[in-house]
Image (cartoon, rainbow, N blue to C red; front, side, top):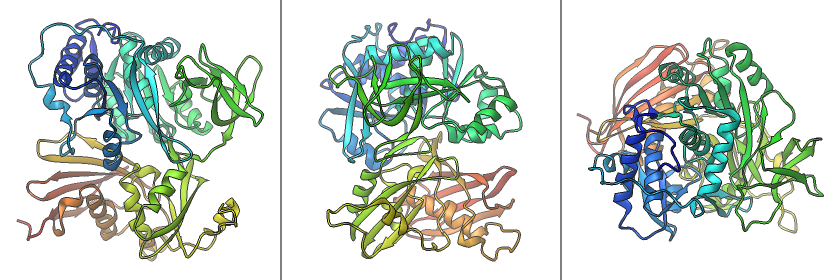
Length: 562
């Protein structure tokens, strides 16, 4: 694998939970994965590993076995099943307890190592397929050759680091093209070490940075905003931000409070990296070899060495820009039906089509609205349906979309305001949401992370920002609202267990319940759920800024809990 990872046998490739790994370890582990896949006809392998080292070993092993890898747009169960159902997919590699089908990379890495070194790759062949959702809602496949992938990673490493021996921590999952490039490929190509975990909460990120002497952080604006508010932070050589424009207040706080230099990356799945800028700058500078121009409508046109050879050049990107002297440009906003929610690209048409597939839904329309929070945008949907509730519609969408992008507002109507042509004008659609909405009774997670657990267990960490307009706050207590314990148990725990593990059965008992701290409107919290399916129990803890807020154990099943 000398053409991919540049590490010597004793140089560190990964640090963190699961023990450090060296260049020699990566070569052996990639060989184990390659041997497991060797009997399959050449095709594609879907990888959904939360541990970045396992992801890297699975990726290199799949390539060595003659396969390309296919990355799903998210790792929700129905999405993975749909992507894996492609005729080109030969296997699914994962590191999840209870995952349906596929091969557990943890088990593959325990097998004996095959003899001999892995042969260098043919960099001209296709190594990656990335699935995106276009503005029509149809899933699109985009392909990258080895040369495109590694050349782009090399350019990023030369421009910004990490440098040999640097340590890279990413809060972005490796199945995202940005997380793959900057969290996995850049350290492999630069001789750095990746941190295996993907911490999300500010306290966890800071602890990981300090514990592993991290020099480079790969993140997104929503995560960086919470880090900017931290009281103290270890030094970093550079912070990457992508997915959405970084607010100036966040960039200044990171620089002034922590001394962190931030580089923003602008790119697309189709084109790869397009441009970069120092946080706080107005204009973007194209990557070396990338040129930017505009069409008659002011839309950005990009020619890039990392665009598929057979695609039209220059390639239209769904953003309006203003060109600046010297080849740079300023972004002016989106042009298509794709929303950016917390840095995640979401097709409004796909949201509509998923709703139309729900029994009882007669019509549906989605629109993106600016958000006052860190999301950038949020999605609202109007639905004409019989026998449905907003909560059930959100549950149906949760099988396909990450929790953070689920609609913030769902308005049930008798009929949508369609014109004679069948189109819906934006203003009449927005008017459906003008009537005062009933106070919310649902709390949706903003982030979800699978964390390490013992055999037979499945553990998740969910992050929430508590909405101020929850019905639970009315009268509890005037002038000093706090979230009641029953709301914590129902909205933050029991409903999430039902969503994550619908096979758990009915809730039979609550044991060892303890409330320790108050939860107030606007507070950011994390909820740890640890399921032992064999015993039918889920242990939980709710953590806020000042420590543990609540904890206990839920017992599920057809009979009384033991």
